[in-house]
Length: 139
Image (tube, rainbow, N blue to C red):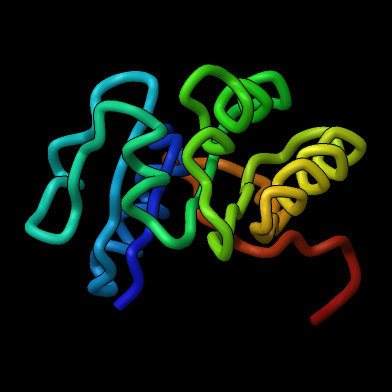
């Protein structure tokens, strides 16, 4: 199984990381606040720094709130870029500025790594069914 990193364990990131752990991957976790205890298993380890996540993982997933957060996690002190080695892959699932994403990808590519832009939309829906909407007419 793959060694994966997951940075950003908020309302959308935590369930995504849980699925990767359940699938049997070794997952290294980091988030601004405390890593949820329900994610910690023999296959999932909380890392104190982003740098530690990137050192351990071959593929690093990010699920962050907005463009400045992604820039800081990627290029800030001890960010993702500081620990990348050739051949690793960064998967950004944050829904952020496409122009900034292109710039981020170029910088990560220049380090000999792949950058996959995979934005997600939506969020957690509570108490509502996800039924398709019907707009008039007969079935």
